[in-house]
Amino acid sequence: MANLRLSKINKVFGSVHVVHDVDLEVLDGEFVVFVGPSGCGKSTLLRIIAGLEKATSGAIEIDGEVVNDVSAAERGLAMVFQSYALYPHMSVYQNMAFGLENNRMPRAQIDARVREAARMLRIEEYLGRKPKALSGGQRQRVAIGRAIVRKPRVFLLDEPLSNLDAELRVLMRAELAGLHARLGATMIYVTHDQVEAMTLADKIVVLRDGRVEQVGRPLDLYNHPANRFVAGFIGSPKMNFLPARLLRAGADGLTVEVAGLAPLTLPFDGAVLSPRQELTLGMRPTHVRHQADGEFAGTVEVSEQLGGESYLYCRVAGEHRVVIHAQGQSEVRRGDEIRMSFPPQHAYLFDAEGTALPRPGAARQTAPAAVDVAS
Image 1 (spheres, rainbow, N blue to C red):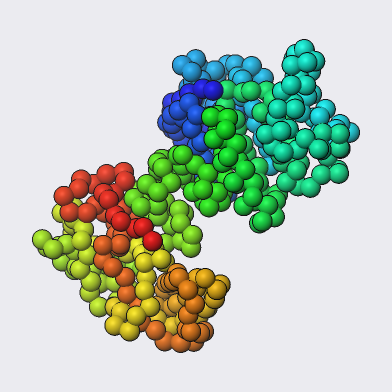
Image 2 (cartoon, one colour; image 1 turned 45 degrees about the vertical axis):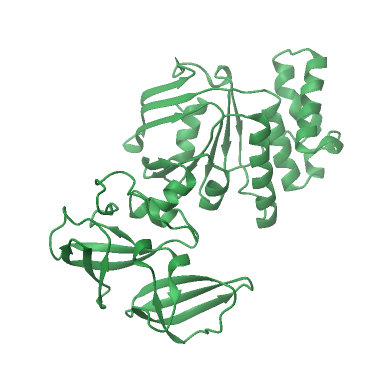
């Protein structure tokens, strides 16, 4: 396995700058997930690491060796694609063995590697089948097995579960996590699905418009988002946002007017703010409570009753949506008028540029100081 370092990586296609000054370190054995919306540059960055795209500027190092001019075949990496990319005329065994045969590996060693990978992925009984005789999940296992037999320095996985149905995706997520634990491999995984990122990653890299917004452990990003974009992208359902305006900064925190409703005092440091400054209040759906004496009134537009949990989609102050995530079942129905509340210690505030505000005693920083958002 290997350490990987990216230093000031840029990629320009013609007049379009798609990756901007990316600095990143992936440690030996880490499972790192690149996540972000479509078009954010995550797959391009993965292809640059793989050697399938050439960086316009910057350095790619694997175990301290700069590999910018090393071909994709010689970097010692293995890539798993969304499309599986299996040879339809070959059996599962032949698909997995093909790359090793091209490298003129001894037949006995090829056989041992293929059968070991097949056992690990529980596809031993399919080794004689052609890809057309396999399900989507089985084909994806074969594609992963083809990478495993190469024993690469780094595994690169580009949205490998996107073609699977919902049930299979959950199953394959668990299998990938177990596979990583067994192999102790360095893996870089690209997805637009933040649930995959949260459940698989040791470290998440959040990208937007070709720039790294924040890097950290899944719960660090969930609990301490650096900005409104990360706060809204990490977490499902996404964080609620309401417009706010600063009324007063005092020793007890900031008093803000939220969505034109009654003022609230929240425990934040406002030393850098000016009166009447535009802010955004953030609230995780799991912390918003339906209660009779709540600060906000809202109208229920959708009531999702899932048995063990409920989701209420409410309209507040006429134009703003707030989602409530509650355990158990609710009698609330569409059209009901309700009141809602949330603990101030679970609130987030973002300035006009979208940067998260710090708590008292904490400096303004990339990741805000501790906020307990455990559900």
